[in-house]
Every structure is written in C-alpha cells, then in structure tokens.
Length: 87
Image: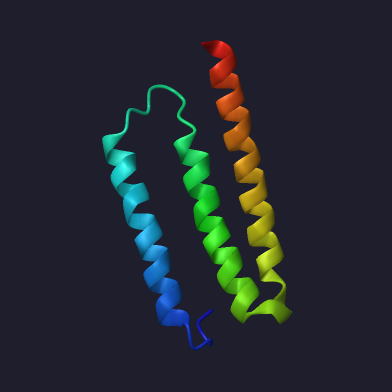
C-alpha cells in the first residue's frame, strides 16, 4: 500500500481499528473465552482486504486477507456456538 495515493488513509484506518483492540486487551477479562477477539481480527482483515482489493487489485494480496477474515469469522461463529451450548 505504500506506493498508492491512499497510503495515509490506509494507515489512519488501521490505527483507528487497532487502538480499540489494544484498549480491549488491557481491560477485558481474559480468563474465559470471548468471541470478540476473533471478530475484531476479522474486522481488521476485512479492512485490509478491502483496501488491497480497491487499490492493489492486480497484486491479488486481497485474496489472502479475505481468506483470513473468513477463517476468523468462522472461528467467531464456532466460539459463539460452543458458548451457547455450554449455557
């Protein structure tokens, strides 16, 4: 993304998504499973995949980011399903 004209917006969006995650790391209870973690990872990968798809489509890096977002969303759903069965 460094050689694209939207690199500044990409960095700003990345930091805007990363700062709440860092705050959650220090404030949430990590002693029990919480489905917010894989969901937040999928949001970051979705943003990255969208930016790569929109501005660097010929490199096909967006396919990896979208695949990682899909896997992360799958694990979010799996974690929610397991937590619902537990209660």
